[in-house]
Image (cartoon, rainbow, N blue to C red; front, side, top):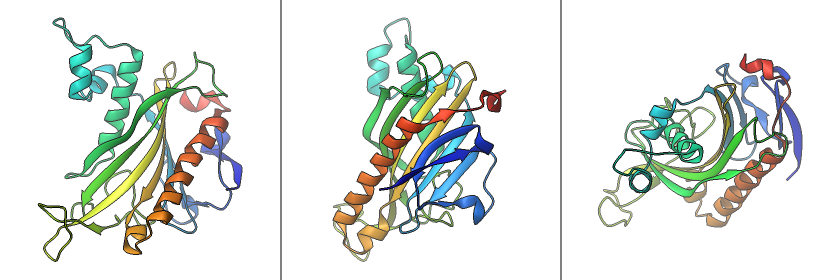
Length: 237
């Protein structure tokens, strides 16, 4: 896939994205803290967000149970920065949800290096999560749109035994390949979400197409890791 450098937020942030992807702001209004790009051939989309950093106490509330048990002796949660950062990932992922959504960690958040940042400037984590939503639940209010108009993709699963049928509820599945960049001095969380709705592939019975799209999404995030940089730190002032 061919990538081209793009300027975000008026040139304050830069990074490479697929050359053919479309700027959503040319089609609809986009919130000031977001940059959204759309695949020209699928429902996949890319969202970049600048958010206020999650406070430590709020982040720690989103530690999973196993992690809490391993980091919380009698004196309470004793968490280092990496533990807090991973909890912040969970906070942001849950904040994407509509009521009734479920989240599964496909690849748990792992610390990575950003070539164009120093360790003092940023700490970064990437991973993959899977969102499942009852079709009637998603109203477009979440921050992960399933398509250009924010509607969710749907597929069919049996309610009790996992076998599809006429009585099976309709659900939406979406893979979210993400990158969290924590800019501690700026009290900012920079978030990148590369979202792959599954239904267009499920409806066609095209698992190989879905696999290729997932590989594209993973490569997209890897390319962003290589190229992401802040050109104007005044954006966070």
